[in-house]
Amino acid sequence: MANTMKAPTAHGNSGVPNGGVSYWYTSTELPKYRAPLPGDRDADVCIVGAGFTGLWAAFYLKRAQPDLRIVILEREFAGFGASGRNGGWLSAELAGSRALYAKSHGHEGVVDLLAAMRGAVDEVIAVAEAEGIEADIVKDGLLHVARNRAQVERLQETIEYEKYWGATEEGLVSLTSSELNNRIVVEGAQAGLFSPDCARVQPAKLVQGLAAAVERLGVVIYEQTTVEAIEPRLARTDRGVVKAPIVLRCLEGFTAGIKGQRRGWLPMNSSMIITEPLPDSVMGQIGWSGAEVLGDAAHAYMYAQRTADNRIALGGRGIPYRFGSRTDENGETQDWTINALTTLLRDMFPAATGVPIAQAWCGVLGVPRDWCATVDLDQETGLGTAGGYVGSGLTTTNLAGRTLADLVLRRDTDLTRLPWVGRRVRPWEPEPFRWLGVQAMYTLYREADRRENALNLEHTSKIARFANKVAGR
Image (cartoon, rainbow, N blue to C red; front, side):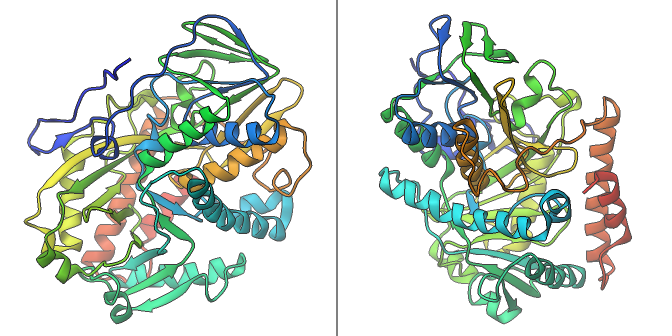
């Protein structure tokens, strides 16, 4: 069946084509819908959500035990959510406080978790190659830039912090402004930080390729099927009930849509814009001949990549949260956000000022109250979940999917002993306190960035430190 999602439309004062799920799909095409659930079914494992987490879990389960009957349920199409809308950073970054992870497993447990994340980057690349998935993957590393004195200080603090948790000299390299300019010329950049443990990816190509690989293994994906409730050993949908000894909830930012999960993981909004292809004259001024992905050390941070067809895709939080944990319609974001991201892009790359913005879109990511990711399976009820990646999910989903597979198969492995397994976090506050808290947090972060720039502060603004306390980070 053809996909009925709307194409991006230009409206509002930005005049930029907006929505259409994401540019990553616009540049290829929206996939045709798979068939919906045809009625009640029995399975060995039922997975709710056909994003990266659910697909990776199914992939590794089916490879380990081919006779498993695995059913995946998806409201839209595989890769509809953050899996097909993100910034394309296949990075080893892990969200959350290392100290919180260390509470249960100590320093060495966190070091092991971070090492597993670095290994997951190469694992995704290896699977893509083995399965013939063409997703514009190039492992050229990750650059963070500092554009004022306070950001320079934070980059230096990051180096010491990461070394404490096991980073090596080769894994985290400090760059002077001139060394940075040899890679990418960012206006006003004073210093940089480089990590080799990251690859650029076209995420929609990767998730669609993974979905096809999962189907080749014999996993059944039912789309156009809305899961209304998840209970021990069954998932209730608008098209029937799936009964299974194991039910895995893999919904990330859409978790709040499940009955009883409204205050679990907060659906945080993130938006992106992408330029038309950059002319050679512009690229000559910017550099960026490699495929490094780019971030900054601001509090309201940005993330970017240079695509395979020579565009700049840049994202940031924009308006971070919709009241009542609501999500977007067809990937459409707000004019304010489009204008803010466009201003930031042209501030960082003045040479690109005349290059039109080709499209804007948004999506949601899952944020736990303590900002730390979780993998869990209750063997008694058969209910499992993974998520809360806080925007660092492209690699984390692979590690989470492998870990879920080991938990389902009752294997005692290095993965099942990692400190994010079995974590319990408190729920978010009820509305309107949830909405007010998130809005206040990002207002404070933006004001801290403004003051650090305007006043040329040498140290991190006290406003940002207060915002961290509000956030519980």
